[in-house]
Amino acid sequence: MAPDTPELLNTNEVAALCEVEPDTVRIWARIGRIPVITLPGGRKRFRREDIERMLTPTEPTVQKAGAA
Image (tube, rainbow, N blue to C red; front, side):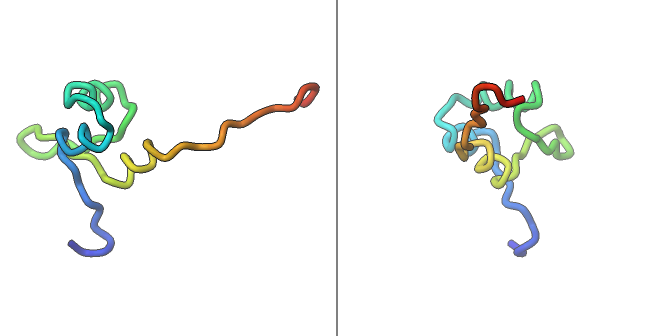
């Protein structure tokens, strides 16, 4: 695969990475929680980088008391 070509995952591969059922991945795609690519014929694919970004924890933003 070329370096600038994103690695695409199918629904089952995303489910395995996220440790959820494939139906959960389908729901996430339908409600827009994860970006989805629809191929001709209706098959769904997901960019690995999008899934890894979703799985990467982020630091919570904490506001100090009195800060606005």
